[in-house]
Image (tube, rainbow, N blue to C red; front, side, top):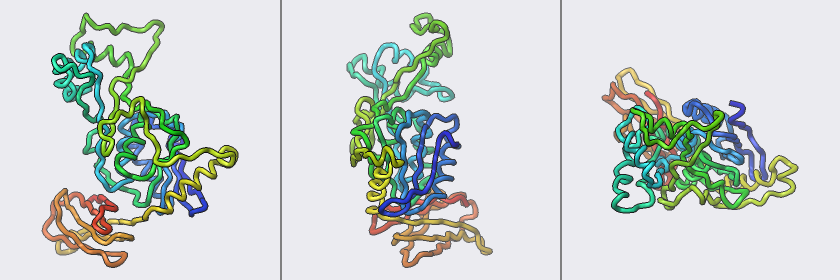
Length: 349
């Protein structure tokens, strides 16, 4: 995906780190996007990663939110979205409140229907991205991560930056005071028209074909933050960086040298963890879990979602034997340091 990613190692005054540029989230296949992102970051230095989304105008929300899990041991809570309460939006949601095979607007309908009585400006908020898919792969990079943003980060990139910050993945280093503040779910006029014509045409629809095949898009559902800023809109506010970098002459003429040095300083001050998991069956039918670790002092082992073992880590390698699980399909290992969750790895049996 050369038009989507550029990955390389960069040498800074604080060391050599990985640098991956995400130019766009505008792809047709979110799974292929996440797979390629994983393939690239696993080839980069594992002691620190710079994720650079400057100039990324957005695209597929699934691609942006499903990528976050690969960078953190903590569960991802997708950002919820809400409609503004209008008679026309209520009409659309009423038509598709029981449409799981299409655009399922059922979660939003009750609060919009109640707004006739409550006069609430916005509906209740629910995520677009399914939480199970946003956490299906788990963490794949265990070094520290820094995100670089600018004012041209928009739409799904606003959502990505908000999720990155809300889940405490790492510091956000901005070359501007905020991202583009366009964090919303965008629908085309053709889609709006189609939704009111299904499952049966609606004579009252105001949506008509535009002249000469023209099209337009609107921000139909605005995104809200989670975590410590839960409920704060991304739309109109954007994501304020944790640290600001004012571009220098050397940045402009020297391939962002000072910006990357700044990011390197942030990475060098953060801890590096390692967690590699291998699984196999022994001759007695026991499940054996092999661990390679660094900067971790405890590992908890879950098999198919159930806790099965907890071991103290005293060296770079450890092995856990779990008997009596012939039907096991997946192993999740959580690595801790001083009681804090620091690394996660999911392996298929």
